[in-house]
Every structure is written in structure tokens, then in C-alpha cells.
Amino acid sequence: MNPEMFKGRSLLTWKDYTSDEIRYLLDLSQEVKQQKKRGELHQRFAGKTLAMIFEKRSTRTRCAFETAFGEEGGHPVFLSTQDIQLGAKESIEDTARVLGRMFDAIEFRGFKQETVEKLAAYSGVPVYNGLTDQFHPTQVLADIMTLEEVFGTSKGKKLCFVGDGRNNVARSLMVICSKLGIHFTVVTPKVLQPDAALQSLCHQYGAESGCTIEITDDIQVVKGVDAIYTDVWVSMGEEAAREERYRLLKAYQVNQELMDTTGRSDTIFLHCLPAVKGEEVTQDVIDGPQSRAWDQAENRKHTIKAIMLATIQ
Image (cartoon, rainbow, N blue to C red; front, side, top):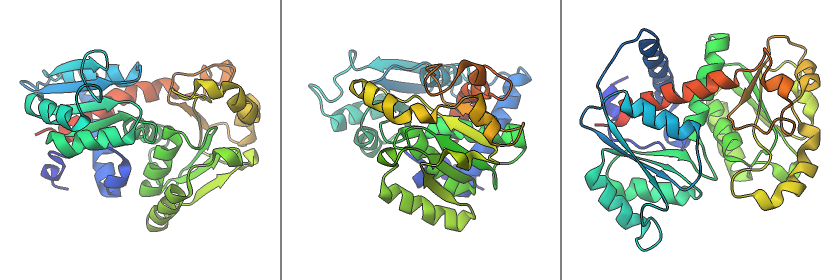
């Protein structure tokens, strides 16, 4: 694959990338991780600047972008909504035009998918979706990297998400798994299922890649899966729904009994973090030997570095 085809491209959702392109980025992620382990020092972003816009708080996304860009010699600039006029006195389109003339790339973490799409449309530089209410593409690339580190491959593996099926991680996993041929199941109450349009699209992707996409409220489908994944029951901005969400999801907690239901001792546990221990997952599972949550967190950095290396001109 010609690396030049990535230059100048944004990452808003994995719907915009082919399976071969995602595969290229996964391989590059492994390469930069090994470079880091060997202690190699590169300055591939020397003289480059990255605008990092945050409407929502962040640990992993902010740290991954800042350290990945900075250790390559680039200058990341953190911009909260208290620092800039985004969507307040200045339109998103005008903010994008200005930042695109000052920065080589833009990262956005916030609420509306429409915002990151406008930044990409008007800035003229690569824009990276660090999380919106709809999608979290940089997270799930790290998830698949982690899956492959454990099992050697991802194609044909079985990944099961248990929890709120409408959230950005579940939706993003459904897209990337269907593109890469990973059998993907969402176990969630019927009222929290991902929207029908995305389901239909991912079924099409799955038919091309040779995998199945299943949505169910039957938690027993975890039998035989390679990985169980969960996320917080209440996403940022949905705090008012806490009691209702707890009522709906308390039967879907990932505990050791559920891990044992897989019938496999090598099933791994995944979580994008932060975790509310005692709600969506018990402490013995996330801190136990089957958990790969901390590998996922580290891999955020390597995958984000790979994405930026591939796309910044």
C-alpha cells in the first residue's frame, strides 16, 4: 500500500477507511511501539504543530496525543472551550479556517459528530476524532491492536460488548470489527441497542469481510468468545440518566461469573477506561489476570502516533 495515500486525510470514523487501510495503520502501530521499546528517538514531527480541542475531560486521549506528538519533536497545543471561541462568538467553520492556517493537524474531543466533521471540512488539515457522542475511532484501533497482541490475529475472533449498545465505543467497535472480519456481538437491553441504520451498514461490511454482527439482550451468548468488552453505564453528558441506566444494566455487569460463562480460561477482558468498579465491572475482573485494560490504555499512544505519522504532511 502506498503510504502517500494517507497524507492529508482526517479520521472521523472508520466508515471512511477500507479494511486494508486499517490493517496498514495497525501494522504501523506495532512498528512504532517496538521503536519505543527499543529506545529509538525520532523527530518526525519536528517543526509541526497540533491543535488539541477538548470540550470533554480526558486522561488517555489527551496524554496519548500530547506524548505521541511531543516525543516526535512536535508542539501540541491544548485548547479547552474556556480558551477559544469555538461555537461561541465564532462559528465552527471560522475557527476551523483559522486553526488550519496555524496548525498542521487538529484533534477534537467533544459532543457532536457534526463539529468534528465541520472542522475537517473547513480547516484544510487532518482532523482526528478523539471522541464524540457517536464515535471513538482512536480508542477502538487500540482495542484491536490489543486483541492481536494476545491472539496473534483479529480476523475470525469473537468480540462481545456488554453494556450500553448505543454508546460511541460500542458503535465504533461494530464498524471496525465488521470491516476487519471480527465476529462482533452487542449484548444490551433492547432499548439501548445501536441504531438500525448503523446495524444495516455494518451487516454489509460484515458480509464483505466474512464476519457476523449480532445484537441481543441474551447475556449467555458470551459462551466461547475471545474477548468481553464493557464501558461505563453513564457516558459523559448523560449523568441525569444514572438511576435509569443502572436499572437497565445491572444484570449486564461483567463479573467473574460472566467471564467463567465463556467456558474459556483464555478469554480476555477489555475496557476503554475510566471504569466505575462495582458497576459495569467488578474489581476482581478488571484488576485480574484476564484483564488487558492497561495494555489498551498504553496502545492508545502507539495507535494515535501511527495515525498521525500516516496522515500529517
